[in-house]
Amino acid sequence: MKLYLNLSTAGRYGGGLNGNLRYLTDLIQAELSKSGFTSSFNEFWLTLAYPPMYVLPGVVGMEKDFKEFYDKFPYSRLDRRNKKVDITLQAPEFSEHLDKEEQSRYMHKFEIEDKYKNLSEVDLARVLLDKWIQVGQIIDSKTKKDDDFDFEKFQQVLLFIKGGISKQFLEDIHAKQAIAAGNDALSRALKVREDRKSVEKPKDKKIRDLRVYHPGLPEKGLYPYSYQYAEIFLNLLRRNELICPGYHHLYIQVVKTFEEGLRNSISAEDWYTNGISVFDYEAYCRQDESGKGKMVVEAIAAGLNDIAMLDKLDTTVIKKVTEEIRQTGLETELVFNKIESSRHTLRITYLSRSMEEECPIFFQLTDKQTSQSNKIQIGRADNSQIYFWLQKVTLTKDKIKIRSSSSVTANVWLKDKPREMEFRIADMLT
Image (cartoon, rainbow, N blue to C red; front, side):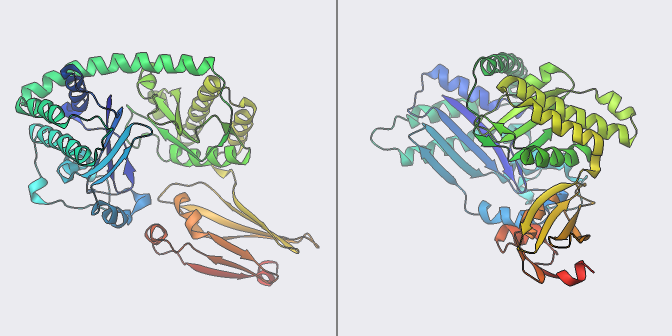
């Protein structure tokens, strides 16, 4: 049996609680195991959804979308085939704990209700215990004849822990659990890596996403280069058809030490994997802007090669893409789409830029008969907006027509972007 705790708010998902609350769920799991508690379910996933106190620049407006889902919680699903429970609860008590420290760094900020302000770690620990008890209540209300879930024992153990919560108790269990969790994570990570080396799984998934994380470094320590170059690597790897075994999301963990990378390399789900890239952050800080960009390119390449070594990916693709990026840097032209008619070819491309600057987007139109060609910039958009903005592009004999997505998500993300555009081919090729 394993308990998992996730966090969710507008535009952000994952991570854990801070300070002396970080390992409290591990303690709950250990106490349940010691009590002899058993269940026909092997995994219990609790997601705490909380109102944001800020939103990131690239997802401004997403708080409205999030609120629509938030108001419908709790969500619950008992997956009997995979022996897994997945429950999402409203958790407004944790907004300050998770967002207050970073709130001042962002322009788009929000207040929370007074009753959820200034809650201590002791208060929040008790709230977390109550949330897990609520999980038990939901499971108990949905159990069927063949399910095994002893709610009375589950609740008894959690109430016992709750009764012993104090500031000193939290500090003590945090210190003990931190050591145990660290050692366990290292052992598991090393074993997983060795297992991956010894097995060759069929390659059947095209890459869909690539992200750069840097635990242990300042939150924006590698920005904007990590953001810009992640997009460039993703586009080129997709274009060159890098195929992966089972997963389609690649996460590069840029860390100061290999040990720290190991601690962050375990994948909780099989649709993503992590690559470790050891990075000299002090040397990075001494670089000029050009040097910083080059170091981030090498860091991403190292993480990709780590994944390739473990899972026997096609290293020639990674090498080819890396070399192209080394040569062209942030001026690497990324292909979004290519559309053809009997007379013309339209290439839609863009350059990767920061969230604030946004990506310039280009239309390059070529007449197949005369080879006449022209390229124009049609606007700028964040890379997360391009798919929604240019969702339907039609190439007729005399016009290029663009229609954006009309989905709720698109309405949030596109903000003030024009939803329909039209270009005359004669004007473009004049």
